[in-house]
Length: 448
Image 1 (cartoon, rainbow, N blue to C red):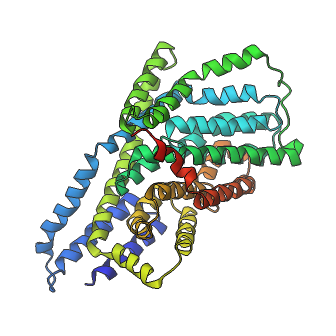
Image 2 (cartoon, rainbow, N blue to C red):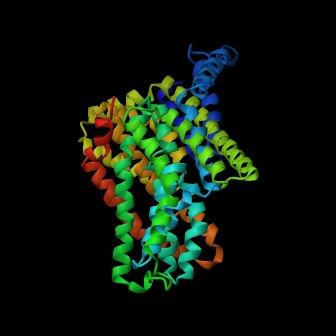
Image 3 (tube, rainbow, N blue to C red):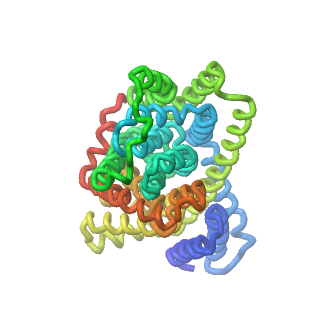
């Protein structure tokens, strides 16, 4: 059987399985095994499954073993544990409470504080969905209590939750770095400015929204706060700020690798939580259980994706795709526009990690063939996946917020509010594509 046709057929079947709601790990692993078996069984012209069994298992198992034993992959459970422990100890929400007090007198200040709090939460947990779920339970009821427009109250947290994709540490950046063999340190740094730019854009959306419709974000009655309250709130947030400095400052200064930063940050978080008596044994046990559950799911998907990548490499479909694009002499901007469109469409229906592991075997060789920077492309991909989290009809973060608020706010209202933030996301994406320096400034200037 023609390897190119086999590769294309395998990819299409995976898409069909995903449309039928088959878990992506099972879809990727199953098709990789079947298609690799067919490849080796038909390699010599006849069909011999017995002869194909040994090379199939050797190829798939060796690739899976290599991934699971990757040193870089060890930072995934460390950062996940850091996020869960910090959340259980209340460290992740301290930034929100500080911003809430400092912005008390600002119209729309609670919504702005929610977005800033999501940014701080993301800088520790690295998980967009976890951020939306946790912050949604805290911020949305408070805004509704202050008579905020339900659309603003819910959409600001849904959009703010997506910041976990860009602001390091990001699980998506880790997976991207492993699969593309790119420096995760540089990827983390590359996400800082785009992440802060996205955060600033969301705050600007809230400002314009409330400026045009003051009733959407009224100033709370208890907005009078003293200087002592502001200082106390800022001081209470020091553990969260310390963790951000360790991860970003340590990596930028060449003091830590990303894995070392994860281990040190987790150790400090545990120490501070215990010394401040903010973490009970029951909370610690729950955090570890959540870490094991989430890590297992990510490892299963990553291992299955590695099997699928090995099969795609066998077929030679990626080099063929690159050669076809080069032969067509398409302008790089046109190819890039097509890539953006593909990610935006897939983001409407699939989860971010699934999209990434499914598309990287095809997109990365294509981008490298055009001579584009792979670090910059990683930021663009993660930004596109971030947009997918709030894109109708299946914006994952929107449904998370909907599950949090229940019948208080209709799903249609959340999507109506999210359109403003979605427009800002598109503007930020355009800036990142047009000005790669926004992504490359920090990684190119980091201490080697």
